[in-house]
Amino acid sequence: MNESVLPSVLATGQLQSRVQRRGRYVAESMRHPGKMLPSIAAQVISVFTEPGELVVDPMCGIGTTLVEATHLGRHAAGMEYEADFAGLTAANVQHARSQGATGFARVACGDARNIATVFADLRGTAGLVLTSPPYGVRTHGHVRCGSREGGGPVEKSNHRYSKDKGNLAHRPLPQLMEGFGQILGGCGELLRPGGVVAVTVRPIRVSGRLVDLPGQVIETAEAAGLVLTHRLAALLCGLRDGRLVPRASFFQMLEAWRGQEKGQPVCAAAHEDLLILRKRGDED
Ligand SMILES: C[S@@+](CC[C@H](N)C(=O)[O-])C[C@H]1O[C@@H](n2cnc3c(N)ncnc32)[C@H](O)[C@@H]1O
Image 1 (cartoon, rainbow, N blue to C red):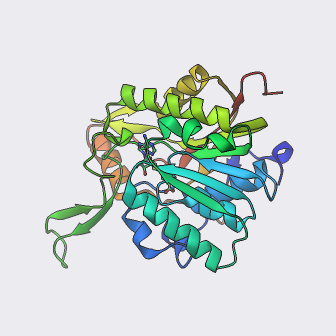
Image 2: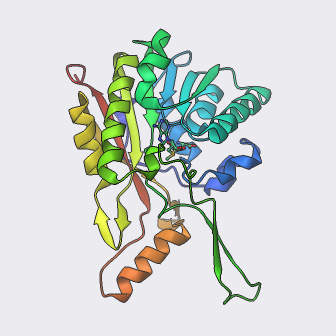
């Protein structure tokens, strides 16, 4: 598939996230609360880059973008604020190499607001920046019922990135967006002419209210010198026999139930917005 025949809806949820990762990522990766679906990364990288090109993820978590890029013969560079996750990225990249991935990848641990300085040697060389911002602690994590028979207390785990207030995930939304804008500005300096920035993001609910995070990301990106060229849907649900196979998380279902109990028409998200942006002046 290339960009000229790109459909507006990508069937990226045909397999459950954990099935997509099984054997391809180290098991400890599961403790990251907000990973990108590997099939989203793989499809975006395949469409917007050629083998041998450089893909950058400034907030790389456990390294999904880097792993999928190297399996597709692209090279990759990632930054991650949390040392634990940066270590998991390194482990996942090494695992990919052991499975025959031909691309090379490097990861730096630190604040990606400085990415253009940290990766100064990569300025003007990236074909694609692919990333997703953190959404805070509400929508993430794993749950377990405290009793085998059900009815026991629900235990949450892996729902926090860390306790470090410097992590943008832990900042109020305006500060998260300000920091994300600085990161996108720095990434713009790494792009080669004609390069693309792709951001996956979905609306969230905060205290029952729908927050248009994709809309805020578009405004933030445009203030950072980027222009939106496509707005696509990357499915989180599967498609079988003409029907959707829902894969909503416990937290999404909980928000939907809470809203519906109050008589509100709340739905659980079945897709992420995939925003495709280019540097202003580069969009034609
Ligand atoms: C939504 S997650 C990205 C997950 C990633 N796409 C993956 O599949 O593993 C966002 C990440 O941004 C990281 N982060 C937060 N603030 C950051 C900053 N200032 N610089 C770099 N990374 C940051 C968080 O620790 C988190 O791992």
